[in-house]
Amino acid sequence: MTFIKALAGNFPLIAASVTILLAQLVKVPIVFITQRIWNPQLGFSTGGMPSSHSAAVTSLATAIGIQEGLSSVAFAIAVVIAAITMFDAQGIRRHAGIHASLINRLMTTGDRVETDGYTHKALKELLGHKPIEVVVGALFGIVSSLLIYGLFYY
Image (cartoon, rainbow, N blue to C red; front, side, top):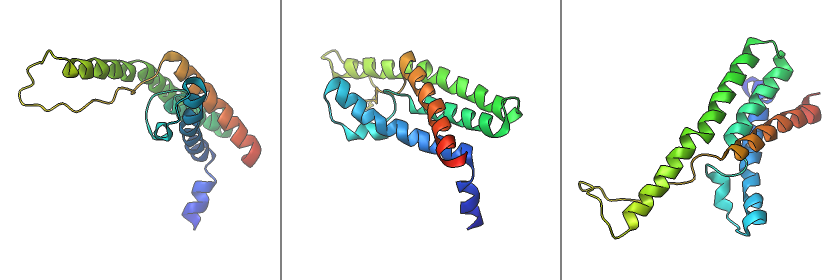
């Protein structure tokens, strides 16, 4: 029971965990409102608005900043990890998704590419984020931690 009590009292861990879940869940109504498509699977997928990775790492950094102070080593580490994560989400992962889309199109056209026996299964295309999705995710994470702290830990 002490282990569970310790976890429940770990504000940064709770804030980041709740934030990533909320960011994933909010993707479903956002797509419904903007595209009129109801797809609950979006709550379990990568990519889309907002970036749950960005939300989680900024939530974690914010919570650590609140708890440990903005001059703490833990806050500095969290900010650097958040910056790297957000850069990768809108850079490398987004480009991997674009490449997957092009490969999928190439493999479904009449022009076949030599595959050396490889049987193509469609690659996942929604991997990364547009910069706006990363920014909104980051803001979502900061606000989420502030609200969780104010409601449950203050």
